[in-house]
Length: 430
Image (cartoon, rainbow, N blue to C red; front, side, top):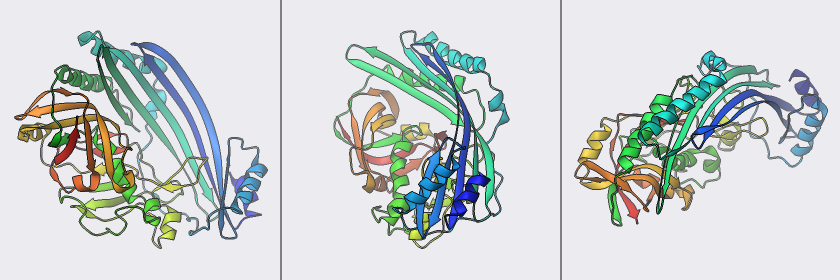
């Protein structure tokens, strides 16, 4: 990396070398049986330069090809964007737990055993179901070196357990998926199997609902789909282009006062936890919404420079791409109601747990239209059964202003930590 930086600085004004090394093991099950065991290793290096005020970039998986890497970055700068930033210097880096040595010790046999236990637990009660599962472990190292004196590297682990159980019958298909993932090891086979079983039991009963406007509960598994629209709204790239509906809403009320959200890369063992962002800027917690008031957008160095502000340490990247702003651990604070209390409050409405889609509408404006992959009818405070062939349409910004309650039971779904949300009204088409 030092040699690449040295060669780049002979021809460029500023330079940054970004390197990733990783090893991965994946165990897959299909049709209730072990399908494959895959192991992979890889590394890649990206070079970003600033020459004559413009950004150049190139990448390679061959570290012996330093001259080509530098030449390609220099050539690309002729057509690159003007740089509105300076590369960051060394500064105090927070201690963030994102590496668990236990993950590197997990054997393939152990991963296979976890998959078998979960599948066997589901088939014991529902033998006609077909199960697919994937258990994945990753160990990665990220290193960043730049011409401003920054030199930083960190290791990160990741462990994920996913299972999908489905039953295809004439005129009907039921599929239920659950995933647990984090930077820290935990045998999630029992928890995941239990969740799948609970939902199969509920889904075996049928219910119907008419087209109309209803109160709806989104479970933690369903919430990230609509929260992804909010993430777009606060993204510095869309703010800089003035295409976000939140562009002029900073420090104004944009949701119910019950809503509190932070973006926090320093959260220990979260999927998106890290000590520095993709440009080497120290990670921190950023308040996004506080009691319904929009407090921050998320920026990398370039979008912050374009907007005349400071980076929020939200640069995301891989070795073969330039940085761009993205949320990290998106944490929605818990509320005061239990899921059971929410359900009990509904005279007629829905619980939405799995959805298909979200991009059929104007997503930049926060609009979504999703098919219910797994939804339940609620009548007089009780779950009656599964709803089929229904679609929910709404606008995320209007929804967040019409929150009846936020649940106590929060969980991570990917890098989004969220409780269930109880919304006053959503359009349901059948």
